[in-house]
Image 1: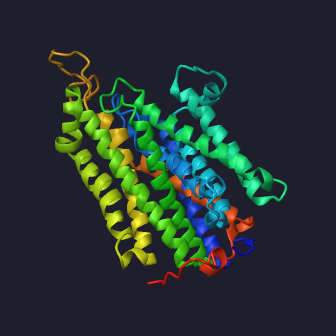
Image 2 (image 1 turned 90 degrees about the vertical axis):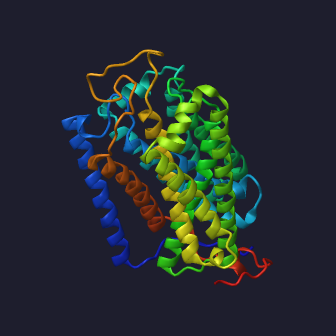
Image 3 (image 1 turned 30 degrees about the horizontal axis):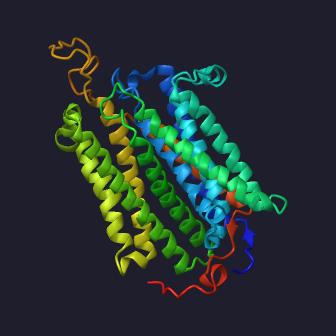
Length: 410
């Protein structure tokens, strides 16, 4: 491998500032939506006494999982010794930190009383998985910043493997902790299973890499930097492997649930009779987020075309959001059996005390808040690669691996 030279993102100013203006406007609108919901109350959202985690949580959990997965690219090089991926490490760390910040900001803004976050940060209940995740998230951000220092400074280079190993183990713990938030909730029949932890780990690998590939393709194309077919082929094959693993763990998750007779109702609801949730499961989670990307990525012709690889990454992301919607909202909408064997007569909203499927329609402020978290992550990434040297000047095959077999671009 030739000596890697990193340079700032030198896209033309008009294009750069136009991008910043769009992202800034999205962030400002999201901030106004959060203020509006805090001032008026959560009654104007689609959330109810049953569905207490709405669309903002869908975006927040998706971004947090993607943050862990985005750092996987750097881990492949420093932890597993695959030097071919070394030029990708700095962008991997920046994107991981940016996605985590975007996801956490959505969570904080969706609390209703964001100032009470200080209570959560100073008063800990160590029997709660939520308290564990405060340490996991803050620790992940600190370790990622240290990881970036080892990759960017010669003084830190001797520590890159050790810090990278810590970062790798920490992000596995982070994703396991995020999955355990749901896996430890015994009150919801869709949750209460340990398989959710490894399922979330595999989700993070797929979603984070899909976002990483899109950011890499856009930033290199906008700046006219060469990106070799061999590098792109490795990344898309790795994405295909993660998507296939995600489908496998999805199958295991539902087979595990179906094995227990007590879970027949929730499985029937999600897989057969759940309306929008069934549609999102089969159409979003399985088809758009799984089967279609696999068909594209491993197609002998389209799998080597950048436009189709871009489309596959977009499908994985769209399927990921549908997956989070089914897991987070669909599982809450399913009625709780609070009084077994009894007929429940409800006087409030349907689903408030169980017995009926709880209605949920996302409101515009919720959607705007979630999109604001995405815009914040992209804003941090865009500013970071503009002012600091995160991007290599070239990822052409002759520069990253002169001995690699020639892969002709389609």
